[in-house]
Image 1 (cartoon, rainbow, N blue to C red):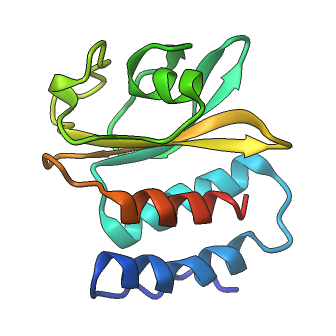
Image 2 (image 1 turned 90 degrees about the vertical axis):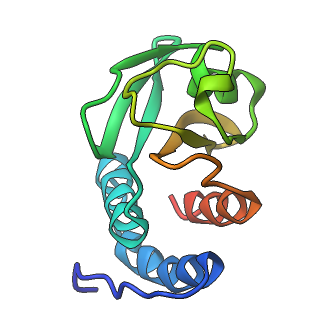
Amino acid sequence: MAEDLNIVSGSKADQYDALFPQIKALLDGEHDLIANLANVAAALKEQFDFFWIGFYLVKDEQLVLGPFQGPVACTRIRYNKGVCGTAWAQEKSLIVPNVDEFPGHIACNSLSKSEIVIPLYKNKQIIGVLDVDSSKLDDFDHIDEVKLTQILSLI
């Protein structure tokens, strides 16, 4: 596949549905995790223009910054700290409508207003998380959770 995306408009679900096969084709045949994470982050950023999107990978009992798109970010997050560390500890996706109301939120950037974090699994073990931040309050919902989880299943 050429490394160009067909950016579509329409409902959020329609946008994810149009992007899914493009990401699948982009990842097809590539086995390098970092390359695939980088392309997934770039494709999602290009389609949705998220404020920040990226991956944190489990290394030495903490989450370490991986491929991302957006402003500079926190480099390391401890287990059960912030939204990312909590999603890792609870082994579930978290949707935070207002990050200022999340106990222990780690403010990597004051412009971030809402967030969704989805665990990334390999062989039933969490190897990292996808972290998506918006500059708008209450910007994420169940559609994002379902569709982003489907995209992560491609990795």
